[in-house]
Image (cartoon, rainbow, N blue to C red):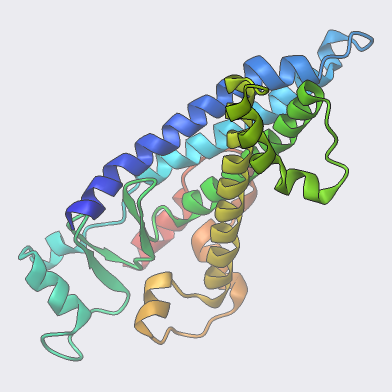
Length: 274
């Protein structure tokens, strides 16, 4: 439990550090050096367009990241007068009295709250993912994967120009890291270049992980399930996939796709139903 609490503090700080390093490399190294074209007008220069695209992706990723943290799932334990720690968790899981567990609720020991439609606890945000912040979590994963992909492409272009190498062969990227390590220890590779190469693989890993989370979460939403319900084998009410999407994204889903905003309409509808 102590390790999980420590991870809950270290993981957000790690993500913010990676985001800061990525921003510095993109804005001050990759984009000015790799997308410079003196023949074009300053307004439509490749550097300006790539910079605007990266800022758009980063703003949406960080904006939804903040919204995930700020909009924690509702604590049902206050309304139910359940504030006995472990006893609450045992009651909700049905381990003490079978059949008494509340459907779709879960007591998170890290957050110390009872949440409805609990999906999972995200260590990179240090918060539980539920009905109130599910859409922002999906948008956070989507734009993080896109920002990592953009950084990966820009970084590969920078390394290709700096080291005079080509990535036309698909195996060139796979063999880049072992060759770079041997060249680094032999003194043929600078520490800054080695750092960028390590960041390439880090962006690839984070981008694939976030894309996988996003796709898996969308599949569960289409089914009207949460990850916690699947893990516990809970049966959910069958509904049309459009209703499941509207419950999470709301009718004005396009606005949330372009800018990081709260799903006010969906929250209002839930409160009205209550």
